[in-house]
Length: 229
Image 1: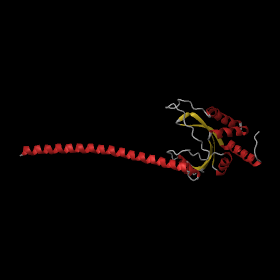
Image 2: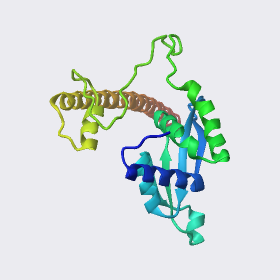
Image 3: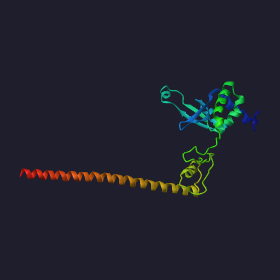
Image 4: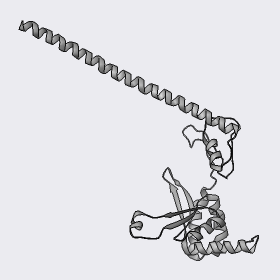
């Protein structure tokens, strides 16, 4: 039996479960770069924005819309809204809470997705799965909080993260941003220098060839004039 902190919380959770039962779906998806890794996703599509916003407020996830395809716009269809919950931890947590209240068809759909997703969650990286044989670097997850580096490094990630969260940039991220653009400017100068050098050599070869042709033509004209005289 699930426990809720208040009657209001229990009501809104039941509201979201009923909304998913009638309008939602649970599907498996993967990215093209790694088709063997499977992910689960809860999706609800509707033409009303209010239920979608309620789902986002109560269960989290992402609310999108309105959107229409060009064909639907020509047919004067209503704009659509979509709620999506796709992070692995959130999908497993919500599935465990919601499955007891779903119908047999919806519950089997969720179970089929979890059977594909759960065995691959938190897989440990093995040495040798990359070209250099080293373990991949585990980056901090996006939790809505800043994770600034301890020392400045050539990167714009921290500076952009500050701007995204609306937090003044710290000294470390500002210095990292400066180092990033210093390396970028140096790379651009080297690239321009290499391009200009290649273009100069190409033009020089063309000028040398043109001068040789000009001298040969003048020499041939001189011989022709001598014969005429």
